[in-house]
Image (tube, rainbow, N blue to C red; front, top):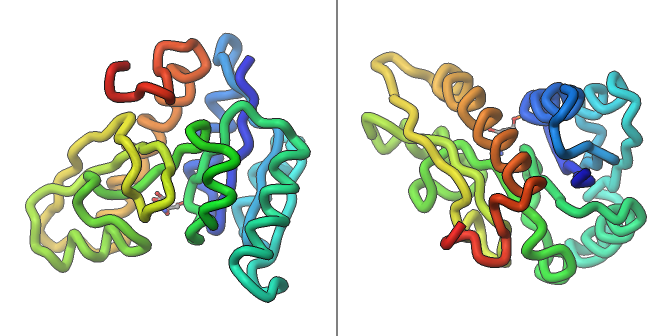
Length: 197
Ligand code: GRF
């Protein structure tokens, strides 16, 4: 049974989808803890499923590195096999990535390497593209620059707003994330050699 720790910053709708999948009999992974860099609304989903949460408020620390060191300490305590960033709106310090890599993945609401960064949906809309997408990647020291584990195109429709486009992307993200975590848990997907998986 793969143990998973999830980090969020927002509403946690993707986290909830993973929690629901993990509560299905036969799903080969379970979420052992959920952390956030702020008092995120999404922590309530973990509470609903009786899963421990922790908050490491970015603002309470003098530097990204100090914040990251505490975050890593909280994560380490759960000894997760896999760390999932699901709407964490913070760049992890290199030391944190190095400690957990390659067992740390991220969901992103664009077809990477298109539109990396904190505003992938807004950027795709502003670019006027006809389709964008959703991606699940291995986290590396860069910004959304790690190996792609799964991705799928999502159409941009006339009249789309950032919210309507993001709402169309998220269900795809959730499906990809749930499937990637399952494939990691079964060994079908090897994070050390993702390209050949
Ligand atoms: C997701 O689209 C995630 O990829 C992006 O922010 C969104 C978080 O949504 N980084 P939620 O908090 O899971 O609802």
